Image (cartoon, rainbow, N blue to C red):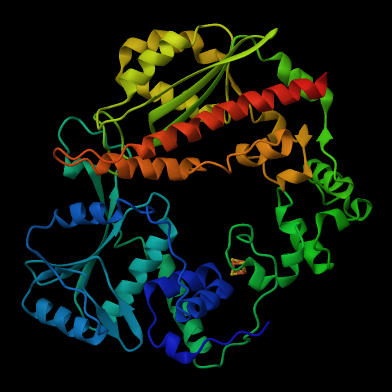
Length: 501
Ligand code: SF4
């Protein structure tokens, strides 16, 4: 497929174009064209709920700061930036333009000796490589403008910060000097800028989209554009390494069921072979003996437990860290007797801005006794939630020690593909296993995944103001969602028992 980016889309080179180009040239081009058509992919409404708040806090570290308003014309913004700098005024939302390069550092600080410091505020945890590229780019633009930049700084969230009654902004942020850390990325930045200019000027090697399978293929929204033959096939759902996908695609194999196992035995993993056989014969693959071993580890009473949590960047509850997952809702189904199908259900959701941990631990400590099995999907998460909560509410530490060894991961048979159905489409998530194995599903619910539940509740508690109590309907939706998760664990357990019997 030939793709030409109109030069006007590349009039200016910005940090996001630079980052996109570095990640993937196809993505860079397709993203530009999509934006041109006004189809900019919208982030979920609640995504990055707190980023602007974090930036505002970071800005407040610098008292004498002027926030430049947003201008429709970048040249005007640039002129205003220069005026502020001439007046020795530190600014936020600065715009620097050198030829076709636009840099917009979060903060530009003017020091007493007239030197400048460029500061980038980082709101996520994993952005190390991108930060170096961004700062190298800003420095390059500033130096081309002969601005006396002496220091490059990153303000990031200190993930070890613990809220201790009063919010301590100095401890919440980590201020890191990057001045000597960007050497390696400056060449990369220059090279990328040159490559983008070649694309714009029509002298780039090729306008062809690359058709090699890329490492982000499974999650990229341009998958079908880059690899049109995958539209009718399910090859991309093959589990594990994507190297083999590359090989198969090159051999014009686009469906898992078309893979000739004999020809690729050396390259295919055991799990991939299970997946291929299931797809070929449209049958679930079952290792009864392994499933039986798993099931014998489950002791009665069985506690099917699930938490919904929030993990705000700015800690909301006392004695929590930035990004720490704090449970605000649990659902617990209990199956007490293998000879009696009666299932009990309990849950609790915090319906105010108070810290939910004490009530949740109090409830669970009464309901979960130190015998039996606590079945969770990816039990590490639930265990960690309780462990971190009892570090705050110490009185439940002893209870936790009595049940700590009783957790069991319900995902084990599915991660190991002791059970695999082609209906799972390569996924081992609870949401895909449940319908494939039992026919039940989350599809009727208003909230259908944990990430949404997290953001919805965070928004809900943040919308308390004065005497205003937000609409409680959302709490019911959250409870229904969490309840379905633990019911799913029970249904899956029952189905596995049926299979081995
Ligand atoms: S599918 Fe891969 S190659 Fe295509 S744009 Fe996405 S990341 Fe790039």
